[in-house]
Image (cartoon, rainbow, N blue to C red; front, side, top):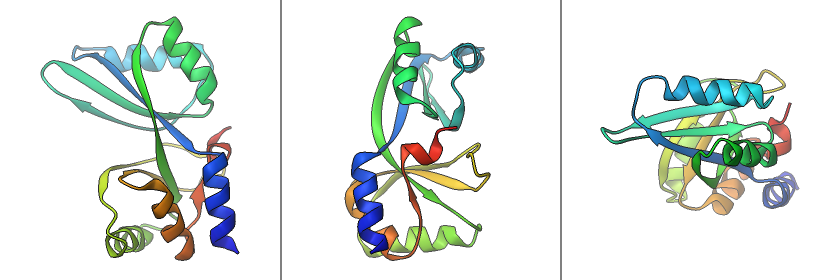
Length: 153
């Protein structure tokens, strides 16, 4: 029963990640953070990858529709993708997550922690090769797969 509930809510309520592309120069992250604050958007999870030419700032925000508008108004180049967000009650749970995904032969492209969640619980954002299968596998293991509404403030 828990598995079906998680899978169904996952289909209706996916967690969206924004990958914002910017030149690799001093202050780009600060500029983005300041812009989001002015738009009353909260960064729930983030990570950054920089190369010599470009910086990719990956963000999970509390309200994706508002975020799209904010990025467009400020002329940020961005892409949106679905990720899996899973609650991690303790650091020991990380091994259960990775073990479950390996056993299901699901490749983890990248993973990063949430900065904050409304309930104050820890969570991880995972970019995977098969989100639907991962949600099912993690749900079967008793792990709580989050939807965007679980992340909104």
